[in-house]
Image 1 (cartoon, one colour):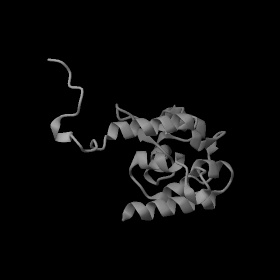
Image 2 (cartoon, rainbow, N blue to C red):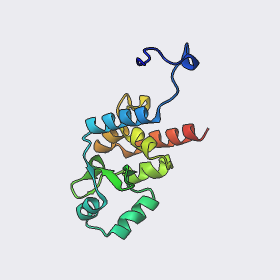
Image 3 (cartoon, one colour):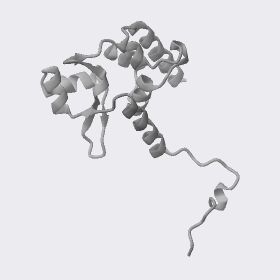
Image 4 (cartoon, helix red, strand yellow):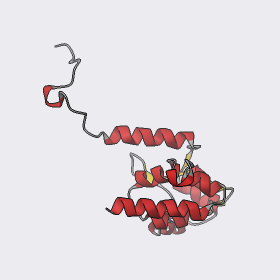
Length: 146
């Protein structure tokens, strides 16, 4: 049987349902453009000179950005570190954002915001504009809770 070239009849005339995997791939593409190297938990603990217990406490307190890979291992985006420290403002933004959705958190840091003239919260943090980045997190948190 030849492959179908048009959508099945149940989708005829409709938009396709939301595809979480496609959304994830788009987020990963944005992440890579932002300097997308990801570090393992051991690399982050070594970079910050902290124990794994302290790293997990940071995760619990929403002080560090991470996601889990297919094997369930934490991965930490490199862009949140400045030398051997956390980029100032990351923890404050995470607490204001108040989200358990790891991809929503990534999108928050990497998506341009109208509130900042098209800059991303990450760009604001890199420019020392913590209050502006935090304001976007508060607005995003309020929007998501509705």
